[in-house]
Length: 206
Ligand SMILES: Cc1cc2nc3c(=O)[nH]c(=O)nc-3n(C[C@H](O)[C@H](O)[C@H](O)COP(=O)(O)O)c2cc1C
Image (tube, rainbow, N blue to C red; front, side, top):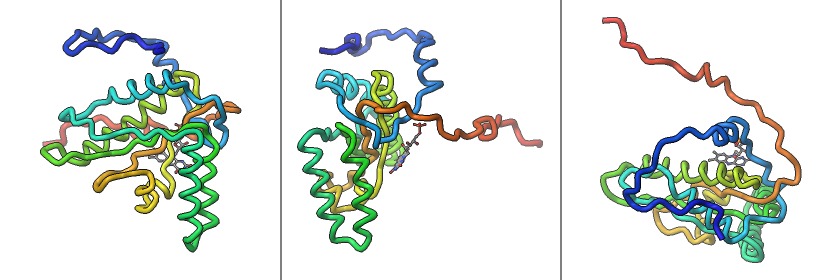
């Protein structure tokens, strides 16, 4: 059962209205360490809501150049075992296996897969849309009261690992978004001075 309002109908006017609760949430939101994420994970209904929200990203050309792979329960454990077997044959096996801790701990992972489509829309824009999906999923999970973290790590890039995940030719992992209940509140991290990163364009002197 969904806690969301009904999805807007195609063409339905959607008034642009302020939302102070959304601003309050965004101003203080923080990822939770994947290692602190425990059960419960979102229910099936909540997960469907999260995916529905995450799919509402800007998407040039309306290509939906991304897809979701859910990993949880015994299936996520089986995925981790296969990655462990892969890592065991590598020279840096211990380091790779240690990295799997972040995959094993949380009760749920949503792999966001970038699936760029051939055509006029630059691949760069399609990949950015996939990144936006990860951001929105992360933030929606937080707004639902779950801890979440966007991780890539070696198994997002390793061709043998991505084959285990089921990626097709040309697909890439935009991120594993780990979701669960944060067993401890994340502490604020160092933040950039955004004012130092911001300039205002003015016309150059003639
Ligand atoms: C594309 C991407 C990949 C990331 N991969 C990792 C990773 O593999 N390991 C890691 O510890 N953090 C990784 N991070 C950083 C975590 O998501 C980190 O917890 C996050 O930047 C915390 O910021 P926040 O609290 O503002 O959300 C990644 C971030 C992004 C955007």
